[in-house]
Image (cartoon, rainbow, N blue to C red; front, side, top):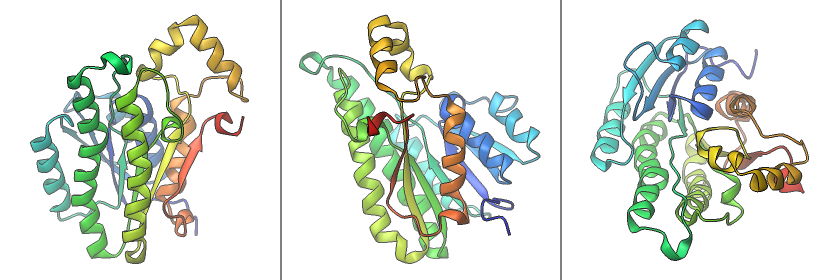
Length: 253
């Protein structure tokens, strides 16, 4: 048997429209999983991620949800947890970032980032995870960050949420591991996505970041694919509560 085979399983990937979410959805589909993609701006049909999943021969369903809206998140969790076909894999990848120095960081930015990156993550996971616990199996993967370990610059809300995701991963693993549910997280390094565009266009910051990365390059979204498939698969059956960095060696520097 191939321990990495996800055939017959259903994966939910939030923030699936582009970047890391799209790459993870594609990788899970190529490993055999059907995919439900969730994103605030996800097209009902014809999206790039839908085409990726279809090309892998798997089914795709699009759900549009604004993670900044608590009621929309509650409804999504209720929907997914109550379906006849259960969710086997939940990838909590949706997120946002707001950049401003802490002394002048607007309350609106702080509140939005905490809602999207932490509160919504917990409430969706609580709903879907409870159904997994009742069945005695399931895989939950959060998207953490290098800022789950470090402080960052001008992103106090983002850093607070990513530290929170690290703690939430461990807390849920402690409770749910005895029930056959694996809860883990991937901590991407500096990945070339929309969220890092401001850093890559700042010549000084870009040079400083590259100088610190032993691999000598920015990561690509596809660099997260293997880690996601591993944590979603039976190969990670005894992996609980870990934060797996995929960072080109950044944290080892």
